[in-house]
Length: 402
Figure 1: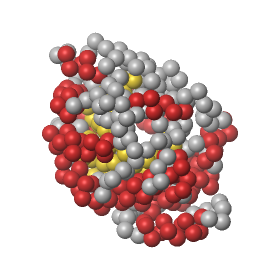
Figure 2: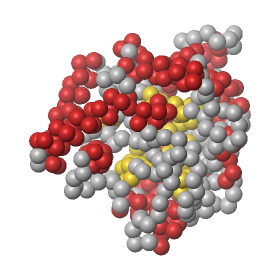
Figure 3: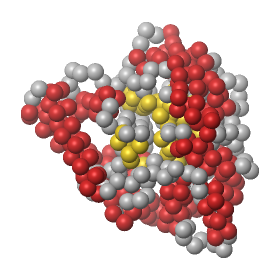
C-alpha cells in the first residue's frame, strides 16, 4: 500500500491495483540462496583471474582492487541485490547475466582497467543509440528536445552497418532509444534479429504502443529487456510530466507485457526536486514491485535538452536523502522484496562517471556522438565511422563533472 501523500491516493491506488493484477512478480531469493550465489561468483572470479594472469600475485591484486571498487561504488560491503530470471543471475541492466561468455568478457574488460592482460576485451561496455527523432511525447526533461521530430537520420541499413562495426570491436550492451524507438518497431526488430547476440540488446521506451504480442516478437528476435520510463506512481502526474494523456497507461502496459514475454524489465524514473523525498521514493518503489520490475533506475535531473538553462538540479540536502534511501533499499534486509536500484548519481560522486566516453557513449538521434545523454559534447558524426576500417581515430570528450 502506498504511503499517504494526499486524499486522492487511495482512489488512484485502487485503480492501479486492478491494473497491476496481471503483472508477473519478481522472484525472491532466500538469504541463504543469495549467499550461495555470491560464493559461487567469487570462486568463478578467482579462477577467471587465475586463468587470465597465470599468476597468483596478479590474481589477488586484481581481485583486491575489484572488491575495493565495489565497496566504494555501491556502499557498505559492496554487494548488490541479485535478480534471478530466465535461469540467469543479474546484477544490473548494463551487466551481462551470470553465467555466460558475455559476463566473462565484461569482467575481463574491467580486470584489464586495473591489471592489464592479453585476452580479448570489449572496446565499449555499453552504447546508447537513439535510432529515431520521432516521439509522440513532450517530456519535461527530454535531453533530445532539440532534435525531436526532425527527418530521420539513419536508414535501417546504416543502423545495421554501425551496430555491426561496434560489435566487431567488442560491445557488451546496446540500448536503442530515441525519440521513441517503438515508432520504428519493425526496423528495430530486424536490427536486433540480424545483430550479433554476443551483445545484449535493450530498448529505452515510454512504452508507447507496446503490447504483449510485440514484446514477444522482440524477445524472439533476441532482445534482452526494456527500460520503461515512468516518472510518477500517480497517472495524472506522470501524464503531465510526459505531455501525453495516456503516457502512464502506455508505460504500465509495456512493463507488464515485457515481463509476461520473458524480457527483463527496468523502470526508469527522473526524480525531480519536487519528488526528492522519502514518501515519493517509497511509493514509487512499491509501484515497481507491483509491476514486477527486475530493476529500478533513478536518474537525477540535469540542465540539458528541455531542461537547459533551468534550475532543475537537486540541492545537497535532497541528494543526501536520496543516497540514504538508496543505501537502505540496497542493504537493509527489511527491504529485500524491493527490486535492485541503480542510482548513477551515487556512483559518480564516488568513482566518477561510468560513461564519460570511456566505457560507453551516446549517439543522439541526428547522429552526433556525445560523452553520455546528459553531457552533450557533439564530438563527431557516428556515420564517419562507416568510412573507416575500424572504430578509431576519433576522440570522445571525457565527462567534465565527474
